[in-house]
Image (cartoon, rainbow, N blue to C red):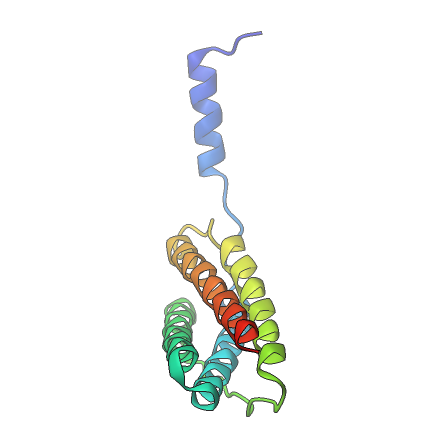
Length: 151
């Protein structure tokens, strides 16, 4: 059974006009706190390791700060309020264990960003953050690979 061109056109516009899941700005507070904590961890590890890996980790620290600022900007625009997250001191544990935890956190952030990518107002920002998180995940794996090669 063929659909008439006008019917297909109407179906497409019906899907486009359907309200997307509304973005809840309160839901990104956890992401802001997680990014802030990750930034503190990367700064700590960059100072602890030094060298090439330390420089890479310092770059990840800067990226996390940028993501935190972006998320805070979205929160402020959406609510009219400011949100301040606090980080705990990084745990004393082996570097590889810390990086594995960071990788898991980044994968969680990636999933959160991708899920919010359909938001009509901030979706493109979340998709850009998701792409950057993919790159961060690759860098973390690269650092882990180099550290295990040194042993």
